[in-house]
Length: 234
Ligand code: CA
Image (cartoon, rainbow, N blue to C red; front, side, top):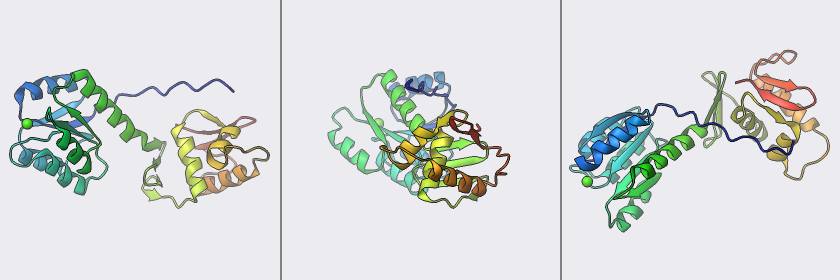
């Protein structure tokens, strides 16, 4: 105890990115830079194309210029958001884009970057958005947790969890593969000033096991590490 956990390595997944930018001088270097990071980039040059590709598309992230021919980036964002509220969107705004910026965030973008920008800066923003997006959808074995929506599933079945059961599951799944000490669980899920018995925890663990369909004698996912805490198998 006392030692801080190491930061989680960021597993840079290959993300599918939709880029809409009509200025070739920006678009081409951006495509190259994103591809160098390992992403799959679909690049379009008009807002109309961006709407066609984005609505119902399966991109992990969108980078939208605001000043696009046809439909502007803000409207593209709104139309895509209507069907896919969770997809991260980063706007590219004009140089004197004070108003663009305000409108951009109102329109539901997660971040914006003002032209001219350094590629490294944009790549860092993209990375941050992707990290955030994956962090909110935790997954271990056949269990999935959507932290923002406070929903959890085992396979395709949504789990009906009490608030504490949800918090406990989210913490354990977030740390999947590693032991989480009883003290930490009590502090984070129950009360930061907690001290004393962990009977409450034991009760919640057994309820959670039942809801996960675990064999209480021989749990496969939610495992007790004797004398230390709990581990959710990765
Ligand atoms: Ca433009």
